[in-house]
Length: 359
Ligand code: HEC
Image (cartoon, rainbow, N blue to C red; front, top):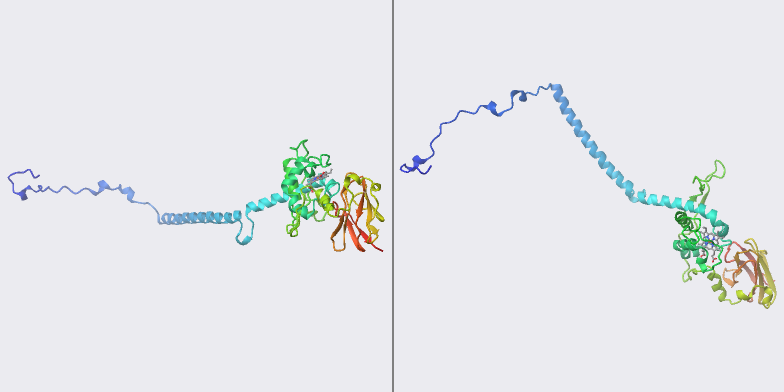
């Protein structure tokens, strides 16, 4: 445009163009049919209503999902303020109860014959004592006992308690699940009540129609605390008896005590027997202020017994060596002051009697 020499600059401006014809509108818009909606007013109103419903559906759907998420949150993690338990915890507790109830049946079928229906002891040592349950009878220890058998406790190769676990040597009858159930039962809390269930159908046992189901409680007292300064329960249960007798030093040594005659009798003699986990004489008398011999005849084959004498205040004044029947032992008891005493078998706390010293 600027290469127009010889022309004055104003004449070099672009040449004015003749104005073009106006663009026909129809060329750029939809055909007229598109500009008609052909809707009756009713139909138009319906469409408006329908889109409102659709918005409602959407709103409600979002609300439902939101409520579900909130509800599920509390269902899973528990209502605030402890109104309900977290689901996982509740399921664990339910499983624990089931394990304890199964373990109860396994215990009654296999262990009660030796350890007593309530764990009070018998041919085997007591299991239900709080001081033993506190630390001695821990899950690992029980598991090892069942895996290895009775010799695990004190190394007694001839122990009458067999191997129970089917992974033991030789394999016992209980699988790992049954062992776990047993441990759950032995460790169950005294504060909880469980239902006795039929071993095969696992239905509650109802003794007579219409009666309430039978129940049992665990053994472990959750509130139990050993006395301050108490010595822990010995690793070997027999040590409980041997270590206690070392202090009074009054009883005959286990080796030389097979017959009462082998001991020089001191003062008067008092006789006691044990049979069927009971003392033969419930009331004994002894002279006051003089050493005396306590002849003890344990007639319970394979069952350990002894005699522990306690004064009126409950303090132990004499502990006899443990003897496994059938066996006799002569305990030399140091002079006791006149008064009323009680005696008990350390293995079987339900075996008790009274000892009157003096006239
Ligand atoms: C044939 C009798 C007998 C049977 C059945 C029996 N036990 Fe024993 N149990 C014993 C004897 C005896 C001991 C002591 C071990 C020893 O010889 O030193 C013992 C020891 C134990 C101990 C260790 C006790 C302690 O104070 O250290 C535990 C735990 C135990 N038994 C659990 C069981 C369980 C659980 C069962 C059932 C599966 C069972 N026992 C079945 C006789 C038996």
